Amino acid sequence: MNLEGVVAEPSDLPVVDHHCHLSPDGEGVAAAQRFRAAGGTHLFLATQQYGPKTPTRLEEYAAQFETTERIARAVEAETGLVVYLTVAPYPIDMIRAAETLGLQAAVGLQRSALELAGRWVEEGKAVALGEIGRPHFAVAPELAEASSEVLRSALEIARDVGCPAVVHCEELDAAGYRELAAFAARASFPLGKLVKHYAKTVLSPEELGGIVPSYLASRDAVAGSLRHPGPWFWETDFLDDPKRPGAVLDLATVARRAKALRASAPENLDLLRIPFEQAVEQVYGFLPTVRHGVPTR
Image 1 (cartoon, rainbow, N blue to C red):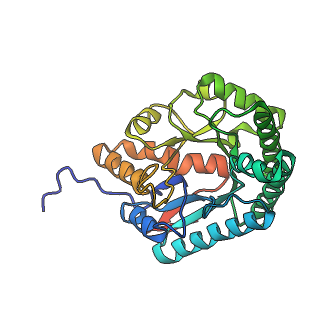
Image 2: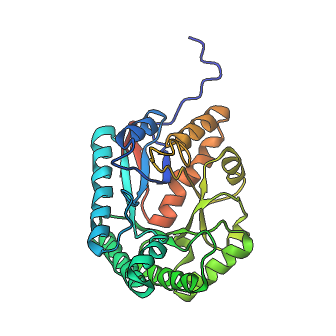
């Protein structure tokens, strides 16, 4: 057998998608199996709305979180992957719920659901609050103000339970990161635990202002991120929506990018440890591990 050009794949390298969704009405475990087959080992699974109805009661958020947990445990049992949960009420829900409940009641519901998410972290069922944040589109001033109030509450809860916060918001430039960092500082939230999910623009550490980006794993963003020290993550934000198959990126994308990079140059192995080991350890306080090709916590 001609071994020229063949790169031995390290058995100890975790391959981590930092942000994805799975649905009982979508591919679910089948998508996770595709990630595993491509070389993936660990998933950060974010809760989402299951079905067309925006929650208007706390019990509906509790059921939503429990559905995410059931999906995670099924994935682990059937694929051998390790799955970490991030839970929180989706920030856009407040705008939709306000149409039914009124704005103040919708704000109150968000806060109650965030407190529930904090308890999930304290009980060891989730590792972060997410997605928290604000609308990624223009809204009326009173909705924008209410969203800021809820985001402040979310950061205070995450601060008090000692976990990272995964932020959903508009795409940020350097000025936007500075503004978000200042907002978090006013809530006494540690910037090293504040993650900007769905980041598409690669910026320098100085421009990020201490916030940790989770880059959407496009080819350009992957290549750009490798030019900077961490911490930073890669994610697919896979939605598992039958109406939008493969959106945002297919769940196997991070694993495929990692495999291509390993094959292209041996020195890429150390770079891959930035999003898959170093960033997870710095932000979450634990290290995803693989022993003899088997993912472990």
